[in-house]
Length: 473
Image (cartoon, rainbow, N blue to C red):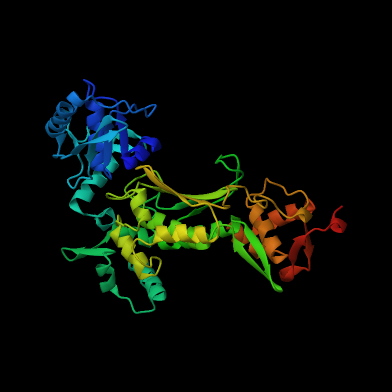
């Protein structure tokens, strides 16, 4: 009894819905049944008011009749066949009728009335929605046990130089000789009727953004705690081979995640406010497990004053839910990509990434990370401090820097470099902001003119330091 009471207290969600009774119009209930079967399963509890969570119960003389009615209704109106588990729970002397639906193995499930695709439903948060076409196709692949990244791209020609780069990178990562046979084994390419074709996974590993435009990571550092297109400090788009995108995204994050310092003896030790291990695992998880069949959406890495969010298109694959992944359960959506990432050492052991994220944050005394599965996307939230406070250094620059012009994109990265190293060179600005020499010179000149920096030396040896009070006009 205690377990069901706790579930009711939490309220409706992805795997739970309340019904006071079964109305004459039962379509809402049946849609939820179908959605649970298409997802990770769920329960519909009859005898509970959905808005207030008040337990009203089912009269004793109605329990059997209601149970049979529900069972017949599901059998007659849902397809493929869904077999529910129906049982009674007693809470405070009242009957609750629980209809438990298990994850189906013949997805997609739908209502017979209109058939597929019109009556295929999925669960998004605490609501039931009609499934879009890409989700239906994903459910069909799940039934056939076929990964999207294993599909052949018949209309995607490639050249040998692309494969040579991938082979060379594989050799660097693995420390062994790699040949074309390995590419067949990894299903990066497949042979049909004597001709080689790229798979979806192969195209993504080659960085074919001409085919998959949204196979990228959009990184942004926002000012404050909420996203706003007018309030970002810096942004970067990581494209190309997806394994290179991981390094690109983490490099961007390292520029904007603050460090805290600790003195031990005569040495000072600095560490990032968010453990890099947690950040790395979250980014790799997003790249490996996102749903690449969903067009129009990319992975987003957003850095705020108090947290970092990594959001990837597509919910958890298969029959997974957040509780299961915390327990170490793993289902692979993209087998080609996952195998490649494991080969190059980006994945150590299946099912351990989420636990490493949690453990590394716990060891640093941080608030436990959040994991949100919305069916349409999966989000990881990493917090910078245990009590959710904004770090005192967030968004700030050294006091000696004077008034920093906010109009310069990437100014925080420049100021952080100055704080860490004491000076900055033109080439450092080019690298930090991914800009050309001319633009770097313009930015440095503006900072000198506004009294923020002053130059030291000349020619190739010129460096820039923060202007002291004596240097300012």
